[in-house]
Image 1 (cartoon, rainbow, N blue to C red):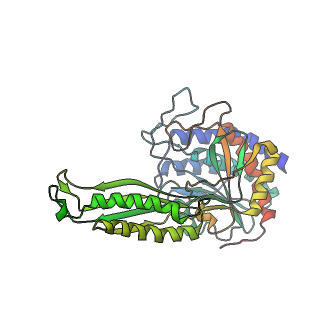
Image 2 (cartoon, rainbow, N blue to C red; image 1 turned 120 degrees about the vertical axis):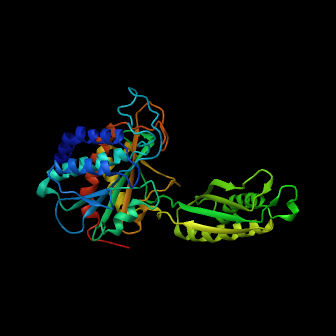
Image 3 (tube, rainbow, N blue to C red; image 1 turned 90 degrees about the horizontal axis):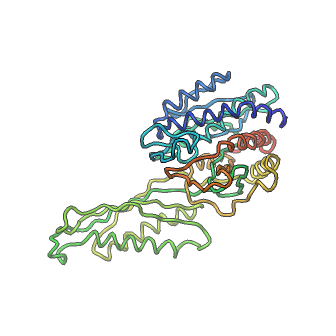
Amino acid sequence: MHQRLDGLLSEVESAAIGVRRHLHRHPELGWHEHRTQRFLSDWLEAAGLEPHPVAKTGLVVDVGAGDAPVIYRADIDALPIQDMKQRGGAAVVSEVQGVCHACGHDLHTAVAAGLARALHRLGPDLPGRVRFVFQPAEEVFPCGAAAVLSEGVAKGARAALALHADPMRDTGHVGVRVGPLTATSDKISVEVIGESGHGARPHLAHDAILGAAGVVQALYAMISRVVDPVEPAVLSLGTIHGGDADNVIAGRVRLTGTLRTLYNDTRERLHREVRRTAEAAALVHGCSADVSFALGSPPTHNDPRLHKVLKLAADDVLGPSGVVEVTVPSTGAEDFGEFSAALPTYMLRVGVRTPGHPTRHLHTPTFDVDERAIGVAMRVMGRAILATFDAISEPEHR
């Protein structure tokens, strides 16, 4: 079976690379992937598949037959970043001003599209049903994963698989990890409320800028004192807005940022501590603090049984030297965590760095991938999909 599948994947590899190049030239932001949706729908229909829309701008297509499908998820949206790669130095460059695939979603989608075509050609030899989810809006809030799940995409499914481009690893290498892989990313808003006044008479006012400065310092100090030092937790304040004139003491300042954690109990505890700390720090300066949170996705969690499946699949394709344990989880967020909260999941890190070339980091204007990683990823994930039917025989929804 593996030999036959490898042959089919080799046949579709160039077409899958073509998918990646088309999407890279024509990127679209989250919830606006209309052209992407049409292109993928036409591409899959040309192979005899029957995709249908999901979550406005996404697609779902089933391959094979049977109950309790294995979900394979790919995200399709791009980022609001100007592509700064040089034509000629890269296989393809974005043609859309201010938008590019700087996180590898074009590669993720190409792998899924190629797998869908190849598995479809296995016909009755495919041991079950695979549901390919081309998910919109991974990079934005509200996220696309929650939307597709709300439409019942995972109902009755036994497991969900995905991958993520890893520019820190060379093509031909993958990263595997059991347990938490990525963190939550909850948005924080702190409104510091004082009383404005004349800049010459600060004693008659309550300075919200001073109060906000106290809140910033207190929040950053708090993280190091309420979280176990060996457990990742990151609070970052990204914006501060307040004041109207240089000779007027500000009566109101707004801070926004993110809080990232790996475990739900830590998440809940830090929500309480952020609120308590901000309110107390503002009060020192005669101000009050109004704290609110917008919850992001849960942590992405790699199931132990699926870890064995993915590790064996990667060993088979790449050899043990090509498979590296990810020892430290990422504090970056990934809305695949929504799937993790619903059923057993696994996300593989796939190396996309051209050997001997410098690292081009995610979410940067020069991010690029070695397109040979598409063939590598298809072979590993193809084996993993087949093995998942045996590893998890029944739906295990949470």
